[in-house]
Image (tube, rainbow, N blue to C red; front, side, top):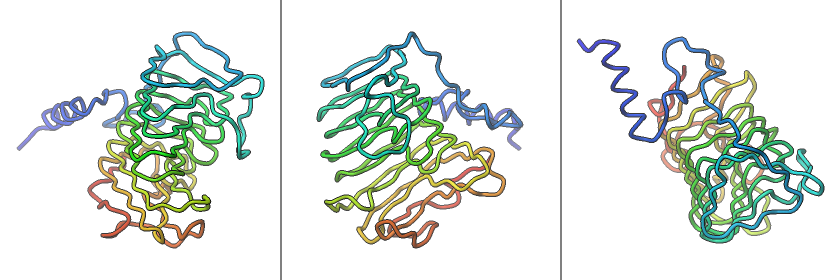
Length: 257
């Protein structure tokens, strides 16, 4: 029979192949609330006007936070972002502090690599205008509403990401002026529950949206208040749970610790 220690070594080796550190996923009886290892900023910079990003920008783990016209941290619509990414841009190794304004706007295909939001403002990131948007590594917390807002067409891929203190990790826009069929893929996501209802994804089944969930670990949620997949007809909730058309996952894709 395989020993517990052998199984644990195999688990850690598998996570390492996905680019996840042991500190991100807990095993045994480690406190769930401290599962994600949040980075220490390498300096900080106030941002009073949106920073335009094209090509690849490496922030060197500096913290950026809003000031002046970007000092908002509420849910008011229409706030400007800290960063605006042109089509094809990559932003990596960045911490967004508070106030977070409207986080990051992607105006086309974009990649967010190892980006951390310490206190999400209106949204952490908004995707529009492209066909493929990639979030790999990093994490977000203190999102009073959404973390990722998908307004444009195409597919959002989120992997190796940690989220806590949130209401919705990903939302396909339910009331945008232009309607699209959207897709989202979640892979190797660490979720910390807070005892209140939260949603990993919210998709519009009336528009044919598709969400695929794999390797989801949910911590600190004994009452199962975190909903993996919430279905909407635009902004009207119409059900939850896996199916063969819109919410593609099974019970084996969700691990509770």
